[in-house]
Length: 455
Image (cartoon, rainbow, N blue to C red):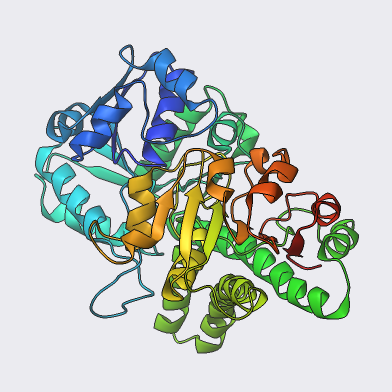
């Protein structure tokens, strides 16, 4: 069997690497038009940072795992084609700000229809709106010869960045949706057999296409909802003297609720939660369910409010002005163990502080300076760029700072020498812990004025 994946991003690259690693008899080719990205996948410095991913890629690369810009050959040879390209929220035109932009998905469908030389299984791996499979089928069937047949399956990913290798190796479940026709059932069985090389068949769930597509959106919506719920309570805790960690633990011991995704923070980020909820909001409005749409939109509104509330706390605590003041930002990725900055709370907080003319010094162990400048909208030569300094050392970043803001829960930040940091900072020295990772009692004893979420 030969598998092709169109798209070498955070989902396509790791997923295909795991399939190749677990299925040495299957040839897996990942194709992407981004030359630099493919070059990185073929190098010792992968474009995606995930613990354990280097070992998986290097064990299969050049044997049965290949990264290429030649999508045409990859499509021609494939028995199964995964579509794993970006589906960002539309930034233009009708339904701007809510609907998913399916331009790249459609282009993939046209490429598959044009270049496939035999009947092929096409698998939606990107997170897509319900009924996208119908659009894919229409494009595929309208642009291919009568002797080539396509079966479209939905196989959404449920990876958590930072634990992607673990999630791929031992997932909670694998979801596959397809047509209920004999041909659809056969296609699903083929994909089941691939995953069954290392995953128990009891964990592989079979549904119809629409249930599979919707399940992905709903899973992310429910997880994000829990984060926004506990963050809303964190604000109440701060006003009443309650401790949000104690509240979260108390309710998490209820078996009906459980402890996961109840950690209060400066807000959630990443490529999926906000995009998928906005897509769900769009779908609800489209199908005449405005009350349902408003319900889910509030999850996003609460998350945005939490980020800006954190920025406001920094500004008001520093005597209502940060103009010219040096703020050290510890962490820029949206969570630890990844270099992904999409929708990172650090981006929003950083922009808020820059609007107030603060000077930022930023340290993150995995995010590149160019990515930070891009996310903060600080083009080279701009006035904003002059306000930003990127450091490769947390102690240097904190030197001379008026305040320190912890925005990513990197383990490193719990073990730093905060006495050394305090001694190098302006006084009074502030710590704003947006992830509740530091020892706040110890920080207070050192002399810091400490602000934490929900305490």
